[in-house]
Length: 354
Image (cartoon, rainbow, N blue to C red; front, side):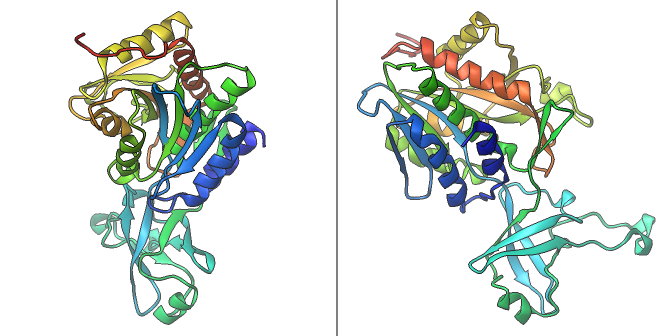
């Protein structure tokens, strides 16, 4: 499988929070030729390992899950009410096509909405969790149940990966399966270039980030790494309706974003920055006052504490079906992680005060 074929297969596959197994299988199958061992944990986090017997352990990590919906209530007339699974946006739901995942297969549906002709501008209602609904073409609750749909069935938007102006990737679930693609590419390139690392490298695709970093918490305790480089997405604040004074300045196409914050280990961050500068890889800076809101926090505060850093991909329109990332930024993230790994010494001590 080529890396582009993998990218499209992996990004177009549905892997909602708590139901990531099909995406993890695609990811692990692609990774197999480039690693020595692999495993999944109880909840489905996938791990590929290079040099599994090494004592010094380095993690590169992304999260595998995407936002989605649950069937929460089925009315007698067949219309379905939903609740969130992760940070799904009720504002964008009306008129979206959806897939409902059942044991009988995919059931197609739509988020319906009244036509503009019958709405009154002065009393126009905005979409909320209380009024959005899914229509599967059924006339009764019994018909919905016969389709295999029940309370707890998971729903994902029916949108595939596309490209725009030859420079952009556009689709749902770039947050953060594009991260899974990037760390898999690191493993592939290390293998194809014949690079030998002096430490154990754990390529980790964690589950359940969207509901509280849960997969990262579990796998960090299992691996007990010495170093963790986390990749996730952050907001492109140069698209309309952002306030740069509060959200900072990050622009897609200007390179990966390196974050300052309590969970980010300063000496490790300095080394990542030095690596970017030495290799002329463009990068941007961001600051967070408390948590990063990413799996960085889970790794940093696990066990006795893990030296952790966050390498983010600027993303437009996060948690929509048109999440948009610049191809050059994707390449720069891969190059930066590669370069960092190749210059990292076995057993490097990142302690802030030695």
